Length: 165
Length: 64
Image (cartoon, rainbow over all chains, first blue to last red; front, side, top):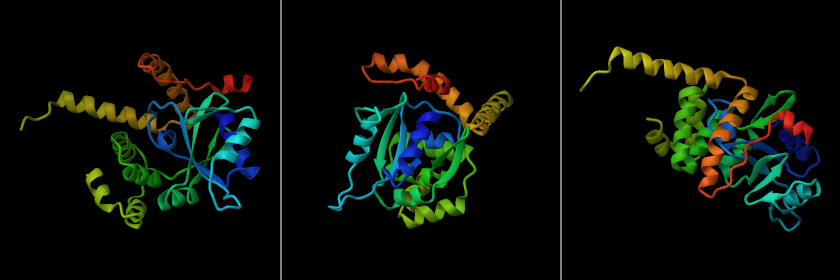
């Protein structure tokens, strides 16, 4: 895992991606008990092309030049299937901006805050997201005022109330 | 409504404590547990025709 995080940091240093943050199940694992997952979700800010388009192609090409090939929706980075997800809405953009730096051994890793992970799970709305919300609320140190603010800003209060009952 | 027996309440409380202890582990330790969970689940997932790759350990990554 450490080598994979080092590759992600290098992508930022080399300007291939603007910024990244770990999200999804692996992001949640920084705060709660480990739960089985088979990929690493990486949310990214991508530099826009001259045409204004935002595309994963330059990132995929760069990784391919380093010997990392795509397999389905993921790219195998030193044995870890990594799924890159461009920031697709305001909530994810905010989560990327406000991600916190944690460390894995001696390697810095940008991870979404637990409050943003909960908000994104509520917004995504699948059954497994509901389980993740319950897990994080139960086990992680959640700042409820911060979470309420995020849910309010992104019009998720109603679903949040239902899911967090 | 039926009441929970003391024994059941103790079992649930112990279970909760165990989960909280897991949540407090350093991330590196959680990754080791995750790899064990993947190794258990992967054959079942593959038997359903889906892909499941067990993450390499840091030692295995370093050797590649």
